[in-house]
Image (cartoon, rainbow, N blue to C red):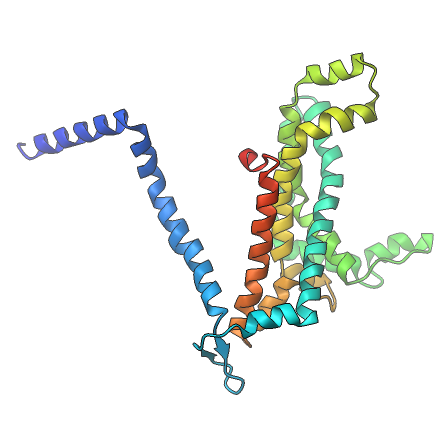
Amino acid sequence: MTDSVPAADFVRRLAGTLHRRPRLQLSLLLSAPLVWLVLAYLGSLSVLFLSAFWATDSFTSNVVKIWNTDNFTALFTADVYRQVALRSVGVALAVTGLCVLIAFPIAFYTARIASRKWRPLLVVAILTPLWASYLVKAYAWRLILAQGGLLDWVLGPLGIKGPGYGVTATVLVLTYLWVPYMILPIHAGLEQLPANLLDASADLGARTGRTLRSVVLPMILPSIAAGSVFTFSLSLGDYIAVQIVGGKTQLIGNLIYSNITLDLPLAAALGTVPVVIIVLYLLAVRRTGALSSL
C-alpha cells in the first residue's frame, strides 16, 4: 500500500508537468516515430548513399569496400543512364499530367455537382481500385494492351491499333494505378471552395471557362500540387509496371532492380537519382503551399 502512494504521486506530478508544458507533451508523443524515421528511413538512405562509393569485383561480383567515385562518374558520362533518367522523369510528368486531366472533372462532379447523399459512395467507388492487387491490375492491362487483345478488338473497326507494349502502355497503366491519389486531394480542395465565389463570378458576367481559369484553378492549385507529389514520386520509382507492359523500355526503377544482384554499388548510385529528383520536386511544390495540405 505504501509503495503505491509514491507511484501515484509521481504520476500526478508527471501529468501536471505535461499539462503545463504542452510542447514537452508533443515532443514525447513524436519521439518514437521520429526515432523510427531517423533509424529506419534516413539511416537506410545514408547506407545507400555510402555504398554507392564502393566497387564490385568483376570476377566474383562481390562488393569491395574501396572508396571511389566511379559509379557517379558513370552516371554523368554514360549516355544510357542519362537517357533512362530523362525518360523516367518524362514518364512521371506525363502520368501526372494525365492524372490531372482525368481527376479534375471527376472530382468536380463528386464535390460540387453530385448530391450529398451520393458523395460518400462516389468517394468509396474512387478508392475501390486501390483495394485490388497491384499485380492483378497490371496483368489485366497487359491482356488489354496485348496484340490482338481487347483494345485492338475495340479499335479495329476504326482502323486503329492499340499502342502495344512500350512507353505509352507504361504511362497508361501508371495513370490508371495512381489517378485516385490525384482525385482525392482535388475533391477535398473543391469541397472547401466557397460557393459564393462561383456565384460572384457568374454575377460579374464570367462564363464557365473564365470561372474555371480565374477562380477555381488558382484556388485548388495547392491540391493539384499535393496530388502530384504522389503521382510523380510513385511513377518515378515504379519498376513493376514497366516490366509487365513496358516491353524493352528501361526506366530508372527497373534499371536499379536489374543491377541489385549484379552490381550493388552501381544500383545504389542509381538509387540516389530518384531521391534527388523527388527532393527537388518537393522543394518546388513547397512554394505552392501544397505540403501544408498533405
